Length: 268
View 1: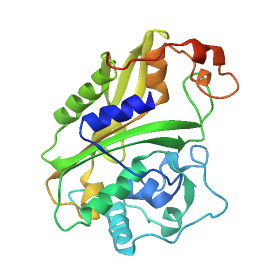
View 2: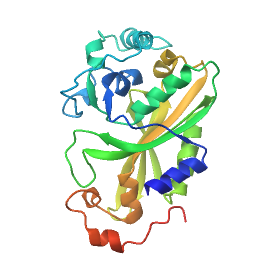
View 3: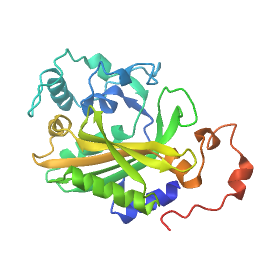
View 4: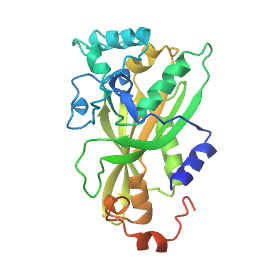
């Protein structure tokens, strides 16, 4: 399934992002995404923080000051969050909670280029969250990340790309629900119908990156970024009719099921 999804991205003109950094700083994972330091997702109940090395000092100082400014007092049409931003919090190391941290690094790198050029990026790799394991949740799972960076993009463009992407996967039963994310506005949750569970299952999140995130990086005015992230496991469950995510990983995996199941021909 992963290989098929990768081929879909390549067919749609996307380039793969490097995802070899499982350990990430809070700065790239949270702060650069305009996610406030008091956000509950940054609590140890949701995030795995490292004991050693507990912190990093390898952060771009000029960019860090711009992020600090937009958090504390706003800018680019925003009031900010109005709190005392602390560098110590941004330097904490963690196991990345989403591959959006990779997207943040790539967009910052893109912003440093002399001439802006539109880009399409994707990644598929592991992320980690301190969650209770149940039939639809894992503490370690794979996230599919996609983004398009260009002038004049709209929410309609995002919906169109998502419908194209999932139709190539063979998933046509989609719903979009308004949602809140600190770093995207507008934001949408993505649902697909699971015939086995007989209900709509959330498979991902999406939105347009906020100017408070993009402009401090140095991207030109008028450049928009539409992006989405979804798990690899939940679409796999829907495509194969699996109703318990633990059947994909761990000691409960039925190897006879794996050996006897036909290859899932996506999009055919």
